[in-house]
Length: 350
Image 1 (cartoon, rainbow, N blue to C red):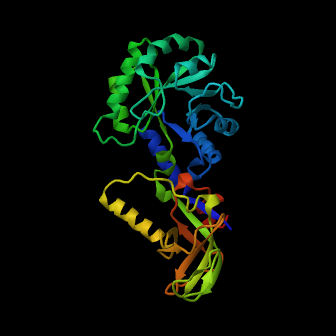
Image 2: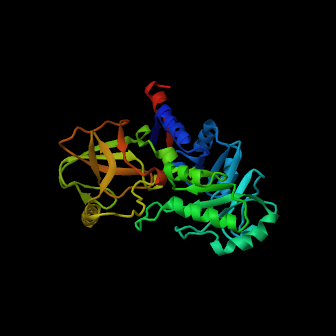
């Protein structure tokens, strides 16, 4: 009973190396559920890439990674004064987002987050003068700028970064290294020309690990197949079968993240219309599942259970047999797979 993620490892790694060439100094990011692959696997892959620095989401994730990644670790979540965090070795860098946080970490290695147009957290330009007085008590490792993905106002992200670099320099602070998130290679190249004495290092997670989605394939095991006639009752709520067909019990449920959809930002009229249509179907207990059999996307027979889902397959399709696998189209950042394995090794029976 397995929800599996199959990895075309050679193709997957080829994409990583191509991105590494596009972004010199790239800092891989391994956080959360490890983009569906697990942070332990990503720490190992980052080591194979030869990167000397790995970014993680939290201090707890850093504690888990210290035995898996031989290089330095950067904690992305800013340090909160008084937080209960694990003991971390000196090769771990902490992000700070306020002057007070800098003062609370004497002797620590810190990266200072700047308040960009994201407006999530970070020091403001007016804080730079106070920061200049505080950094003498820490091992200062550079600045970080986390940028928005979309810019409907037409503003230029590279210009925003450049403005910060100039402000930092004018405050008398060292601007040797700036860590960036969500800036394309052309923008980084422009910054390298404009600020030749600053090293710009891109922190990349989604595009690094999931950028070639064709190298990854999610599949679910068929656990049971039960024929039903129209009107037969089934499941926890004893719904009626809409027609003749089969109920398929497959691996993958709410514990895996199946059916637990994250909110999405919708652009345009057509996506909004589709969202309204899906909501209307859901009110009559009709919800498309992420599972497909022989190219046909199947409906949930009822809401997913904790570890399995029940699907309805109409009678005009030949049913699978126990042990067959269905394709699953899931969001990797919200899915926990039972198994992550090499596609070639499975096909060769290894």
